[in-house]
Length: 161
Image 1 (cartoon, helix red, strand yellow):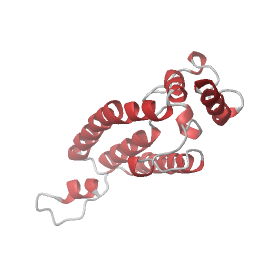
Image 2 (cartoon, helix red, strand yellow; image 1 turned 135 degrees about the horizontal axis):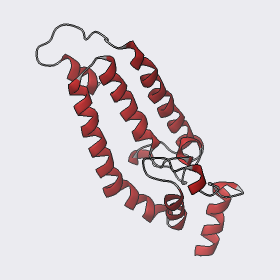
Image 3 (spheres, helix red, strand yellow; image 1 turned 90 degrees about the vertical axis):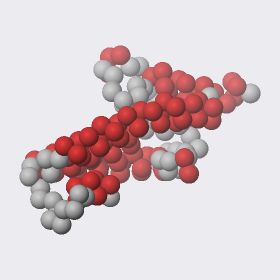
């Protein structure tokens, strides 16, 4: 909704016209990634990607194996694709503002909250999986651990008790 408002504000009555159809696969990839993230958070974490219905488990499946915040990356990919599709510098600037906001939100609220909520399980996940940019495979060990994350979480709960 916000990208559309950005494209149509300043008294423009004309409907924005796509200028670079090559951007459509980028938007589709971002949309697919977002859907995959939501599905993983619901199926594995038993929640939704948001503080109003936070997952009850650390989600380290699907795209969360490679980066800790793929939902935000998916949203950025969609808006960057839209900026390209409409050749819009305003949408590009909006994507930049989104990236800054996402980073501040993740580092200032989300990570401390997850650390308090999931303790050592989250700390281990954070140690193994980068925040934004996937690490080279050789730099990572197997994640989630053998037996799956649920098994790892159960062992952590036993050890913490």
